[in-house]
Length: 157
View 1 (cartoon, rainbow, N blue to C red):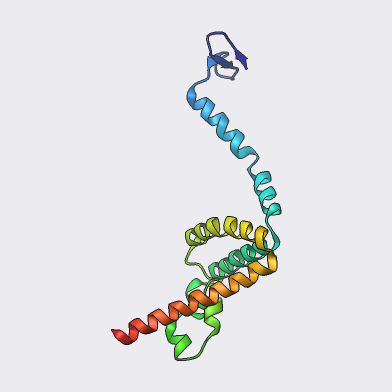
View 2 (cartoon, rainbow, N blue to C red):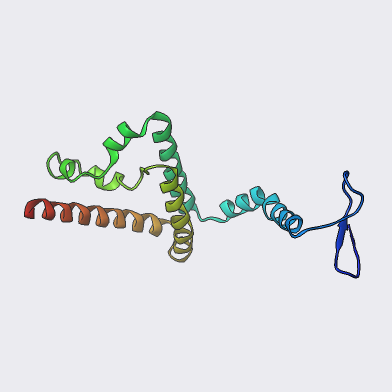
């Protein structure tokens, strides 16, 4: 590549000996530079994540892969938070389990794009054990509030 005083940058190619680079060529070069090192940057980001964030991310993704490989409908019926099963059949474990399944790859990706940075920052400030404990408490709180609200709505209407 050679630059001339008039501002053009010339590059050699097989088809023409000297042609000015267009804006599209510059955009292509910039995109190549951005994505060329993507696997290394992603690996570096994953290595820099705190322990509990990695564990929770691994669990979310592996449970999603499990439901994808073995059929989501039967799997989701066993795990989703249903007020009927919690109140009538006393399956309290559904309150704890309901955060793990996801309803498709877009749902999982969007949740993890939010969860991973927030969890990493929170874990760096409060610690790994406390993040696990906080996640468990918030899961119980949200599940219980959901069950309570749906029970109230079902009895009123």
